[in-house]
Amino acid sequence: MPFPRANLNLNADCRRHRAQLPELLQGDAPARLVLSLKAHLDSCPSCRRDMDGLIEERRRSIPLKAVPPVDAPQRYHSVRVHASPGR
Image 1 (tube, rainbow, N blue to C red):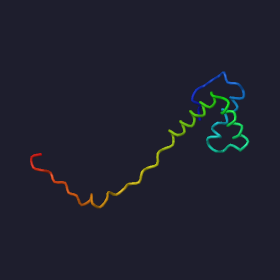
Image 2 (spheres, one colour):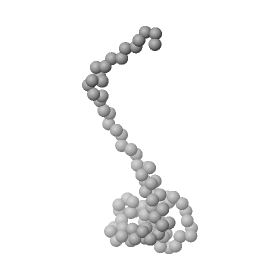
Image 3 (cartoon, one colour):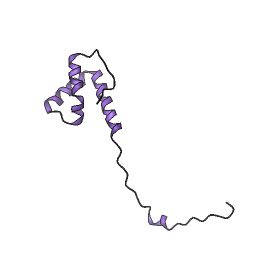
Image 4 (spheres, helix red, strand yellow):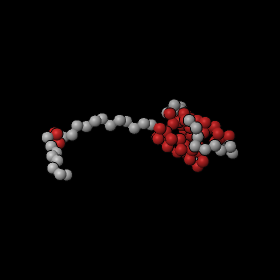
């Protein structure tokens, strides 16, 4: 999963944590890593923005579930539309 923007001036701590963000999003991160990532995100606005971008990207890529068809109420089935002549 690509990051919203490339930043070559990141320190080693940010690079390490950003590499683990997808694991956090997927729910595969062990508890110790989750705590470490959350602490870093709380203290690093730049990484938090990237995490927010990844969340938004993921939200947009999840397809909406199809809405099942709904039958109209019975009273609508019995209504007939009559066209007036000349209209």
